[in-house]
Length: 233
Ligand code: C5P
Image 1 (cartoon, protein in one colour):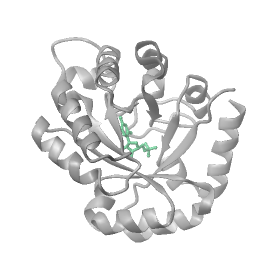
Image 2: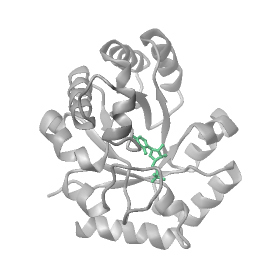
Image 3: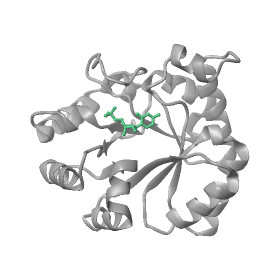
Image 4: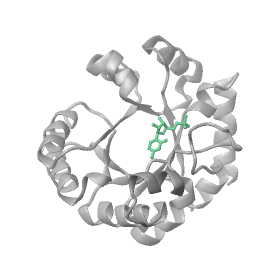
């Protein structure tokens, strides 16, 4: 039987109040909530604890990217907050990822460490500006997927367009957490997008979905429709 693909709501609202209102509108149909830098800056640990006490699994998406010691110190603290997942930027390199993993393990925490591969807002042209030595986005994603799997990071955040590449490199060793989900060309900042159907068929474990739900006239109905699309894929 095919594994079940879960939806993670990217709760990228302007205010905490709007965040709560969105959770209320979506009701209990949702289990995983991704909290990014804005709501974390506004609400801090108290907000995380309140969301958690409502029964949600929290993915704190701060994309940590710093020298190994600094990241390990941060992971040691985050590992004690009862979060489901925490993102780190795999561009930080092997030593950073290893020390993060070790810090999590020493804290005896079930926190999942999720490596960012290459942001889904970058395409090859934008990538060339920050990586002028050559190589494509796909080359970077393949190298970073291999590294995360070798190090024993739990999952990789990558574009739906690179899912089969990540499968080829890392097989089942990484959970595939997939943003950049769009019903059709949305004309926003996301570049490497695909539909729910494509992502599910290519083996996504989790779909990270923000604006398609947050901006929907009826988010609960849209969530239901997305679930149906997952079932049918
Ligand atoms: O609104 P949208 O569906 O584009 O939201 C996608 C979410 O996934 C955003 O919160 C963004 O920060 C996050 N993300 C991403 N690309 C990555 C990693 C995380 O879009 N590589």
